[in-house]
Image (cartoon, rainbow, N blue to C red; front, side, top):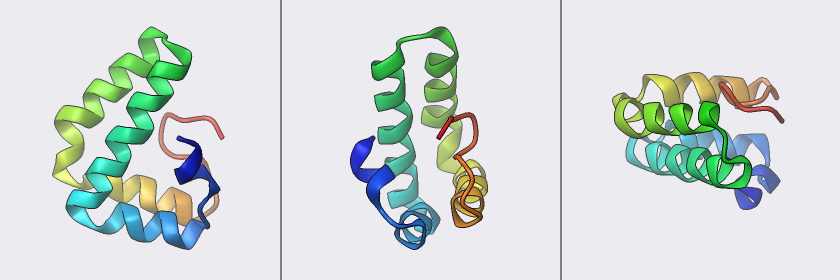
Length: 77
């Protein structure tokens, strides 16, 4: 998702640590990545984040990675 990628790391971090907002951001980023590349790996990752991302653990890992200026989990920069 281009809009999310253009934000500063602090804004991305804040968006990802807010429980419901973080999950929605994760869904949009993961599904847009799948729609852009349309491969099986991105489909599996999008489905995992859809059904298990709501538990906030995966979003927390991504928030920490974004804060450290690294790509999100299972996503190339």
